[in-house]
Image 1 (cartoon, rainbow over the protein chains, first blue to last red):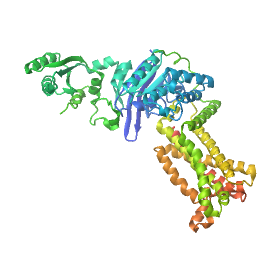
Image 2 (image 1 turned 180 degrees about the vertical axis):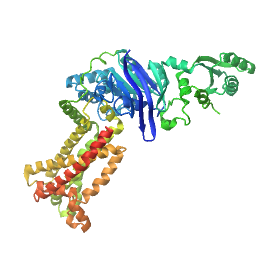
Image 3 (image 1 turned 30 degrees about the vertical axis):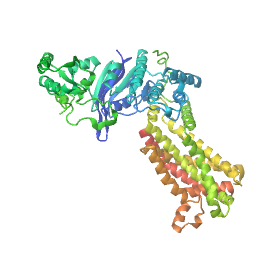
Image 4 (image 1 turned 90 degrees about the vertical axis):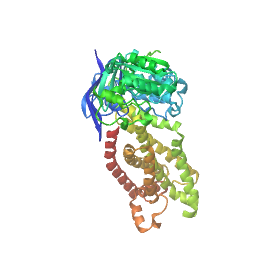
Length: 343
Length: 270
């Protein structure tokens, strides 16, 4: 088994912030590695190190078989990068952007023109090819950015939060494109705050928090690792919500939480479901929905990091992570989950 | 969804930029900076409307009072207006570089297997091209309004050459500013507050003889004075050797101080 991306013990410090505190990760050739973490966790710093944009203070990394510190030129010749902020030239048209990249890569002019046209068509940008990128919608811009990183037919593609800020439709489109690339043999490293995205695309996921990998595995393994299942109860009458919450909390403990019109609780004891059903029956509460399911990656994330993945980037930042001892060990789970219970 | 042709062989074999490749990459970056103008009306304003506006305003608003006749004042002021415009234009390098940095375009460029200095040199080349455009525009307008280049074609070419050399030297300051500034708006404000006083306290628009002693002493060594006098000498006659020499000394000084600083800043961020 070969690895297109390997990193060992990457560290990086910016003034007061330890951005990377020893990141280890590896992506098998031809697979998608999802790097999952909240804002400020070190995802972008990791990508910048692997793309040769940033020298790490310590550690080693190889991309497409080349050492990022010793052979940055060869690494650059093998990768494509689509950043968190769409790095297309807004003052150029879609066509000109792609033509420029092709020419910079040394593609002869006719071939570069052909390649630009081909990529624009493939990413459904042909109609807008002659418009300045500043007039593009967010989804179009992101597709153009992705197209720009594919001009050189990279072996390894880095996607740094490629769908942040996109509407669900555009997100789905991007997912399709990524799947197509992977089926062609490209290795993809994808950072995301969206657990669903990692679940959908990644063969392997590493969870990063405070500059450290705190868990790794396939999405299924991660769900198993955190263990257990989730009970979800939705009363028929929303007015019963508080009653249900109290009843479930008695049986399931303080990790019980309100989730919209329903109550959720982690299940560690197989006897919980019958107990809850009995309590509900005794209280005479009519239930519209009663569900026992495997933890979602969201819940895995919460259990591992002690905070929810930030779905809305506007209120997140490096300061969004809760202070205190790192919840990176299993013992912190119960405590971490408890902090999320509404008072 | 098919993915035909996306991941076949790569066109680039080596990660090392060879000299010819580096020249081609620089040319591509210069092309990119020029073709941008097409989609950016504001930049076209900077390059065209602003020079025209300054020539017209100075000639027709100040001309009568300054020299008793618009033609006579134009004859004096056009070289100075050209100098002021050239100094302002050097700062577009700062704004362009800073925009690329803050918008993430530099990250994309740096992730490509290209010569490290191609984006910088491409930018500077394109900006020198824009300098020539503005210069040609102002001279043409000047001639239409009655400006006489008494030293003929040689004087015009000498002026163009001197302006380019000086602009190139000052552009290292511009590169430094572009690399360290937080955002393009800050660059704009910094540039304005730097260049306005420098040109207004020089011989660009008024004869320094009328200034108070202290100001005049500054004006005599002011680089904008030397450059204005040099262009004036080359275009309309008068002393040439001394102001040209001092302009070149200033240019060399700018380059000596700011080239190393600019390079250090560029290496650190790009």
